[in-house]
Image (cartoon, rainbow, N blue to C red; front, side, top):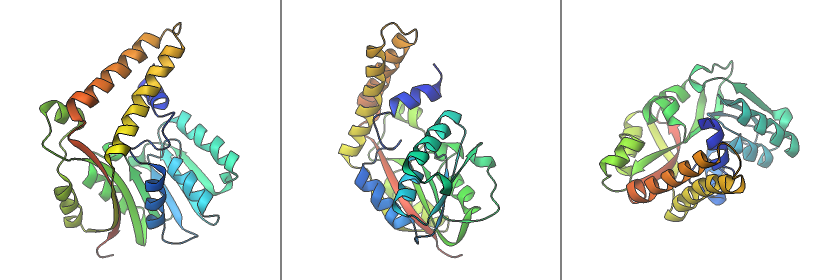
Length: 245
């Protein structure tokens, strides 16, 4: 079973592929969408969860999503058809770093996908190319809530604390106009959902040739979370505007 399939199973019982609950997602979109007829782009859209919510809430909004997973994009198309918003959604099967558009966007999202561009600041440099004057960015990334263990750094990379993360963003020419730091409940709910979904999939399919591997993966990832990074890793979403356009 490849990583994409494992990820799809792991996120089957969580509405967003990041540690955020429904209220947080709604508030972030409310602050990020500048007007009812906005154009929205999601770089690394997965199954299009953010875009589908935006389209369902704003009947004049148009959205585009970019992702490398054909399966996730197929899910997004099916969900959009079910919601009756498919005519306002365009999906692109390609890497986010290679995406080029003929028009700018009022909101550009990259939540939990900064690794695609090599980190938070490279992500902001990339989304800047797609942003309309006065537009907004919704970006989500990890940070260290406390000093991490060497194992946590090896798994999750060279992050900084929250204050330093925001300082780097502002020094890069952006001004936060809204933000959300995931609560302990959101963080725990996300991890329990991911590894619990994997474990349940395996236990429900004892005769599947991938069952033992998937169960082992769920066990290993749950242990890594509890032992290596649960007490040190946090997640922040920022709604940003250019300090000067």
